[in-house]
Length: 181
Image (tube, rainbow, N blue to C red):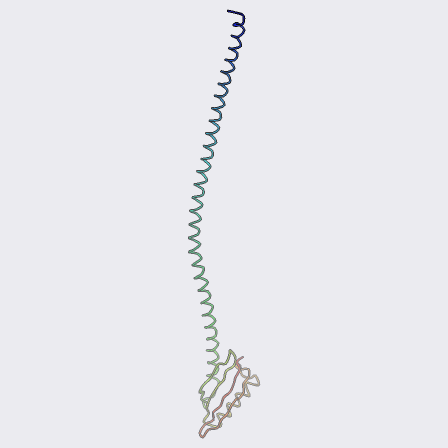
């Protein structure tokens, strides 16, 4: 062996040793990168799966709530419709009650000698009355009644006026207007 051969041998061994160390480090780095990549993929898929399950649950909850709201909305519409109808019926009954009260007051207003033919409720407080009296005393009683009403002595009516009086062959025909209190 020559001296040159001896000098090359340790250098070659050093190079081989560094090459082995480099391969070992590359292998460790590859394993580390593979482990990191696998952990990252497992984490990503775990979050994706959790997100998917959460989204499905929320979609199911949303669907259930939407159905409940649709049913509730229909009930609200029906309830509002019933309230509106009940209010209208109440107003009609209230008006009819007032009309009934007015008609009761009018029916008890005249003495027996006066016959009430017709009456018309012009609004809530004004009533037009058409009647007949076969005697002059009945007409006198009607005039006294109108005077009592206009003086405020009648508890049901506030004002009264004679609109028309016609003397026919056998009876008096009249029209008066009265105003309820």
